[in-house]
Image (tube, rainbow, N blue to C red; front, side, top):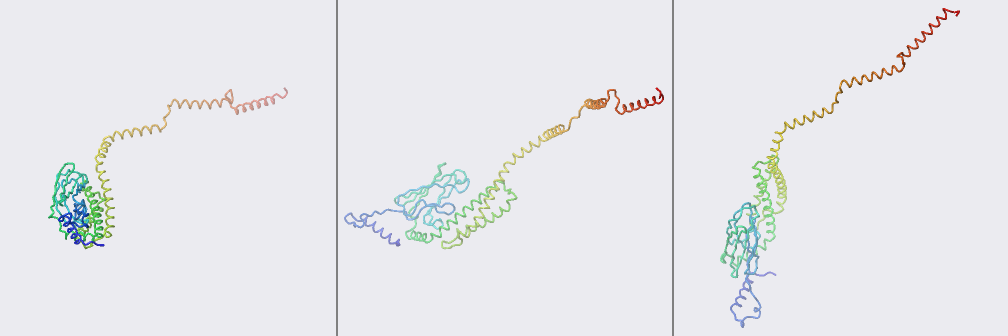
Length: 361
């Protein structure tokens, strides 16, 4: 069952008028237990991440009300931030109503995401909105006061609420696209950071990959611009159109970042290695002599040591003596067996001759 916003406002106004203008005796029994409270007509918040609407006080919150939330910087060494305050029901600020903006300066220089910026929204009983931003470390502070005349009329508020309900599905996809583009852009910024740290000297193996990422950056900027410039009822791009290219780009980005980290580490370690190489080169001759000495020592150990000549003669003499002894052992008188047999035969022959010459004897 739908509620006509004009009728709801008219009924509420009449009830409020009856409560305020009538005495207790004149009040109706139907309204005596009704208590009317003032509420925030539209959600109120700030812009974050280049276009997203971050709500601090939701619609229909009773007033007076106060809410605080912590934020941080979007870039490295950021010393000031622009704070833009919006009201509305769409997830992107371009579809909502800008209430005002102000700057917070004097933020401590640090990496993105490190400083703590506290933004406080306060709505009093009269509907007056006060926005305060402060940085915790430096105590820097800035304030914006939004007057009631800066707010939308009842008709405009009703139109914005109806439009938000109509575009709810489209807005969910738009937010998903916006998040995908923001994440991819942060990856490219990380690549730029490492290129800068390398002094612009990109390793040859990464030149082609960097060129591919530059083409991807151009494509990303074009798609992001189309998303930002699109009318509320148009659908120039969808999440399905960009999911695959963005995923491919993220994988290539991770590969390049890893390779650049390695190259950067090698660059930092190179001076130390060069010093070690110089030290090794200066002591190289001594080491070479030591190596040669070791080689000579090994060679000397491998070659057998020549025995003294006297020892050789002694051994040869021993062998000759041994042989001589063996020959003499055949005959104590130094006569060989063959000579002894010849001598014996000769003696027998001479004896036979003697017998022949003297037969009678």
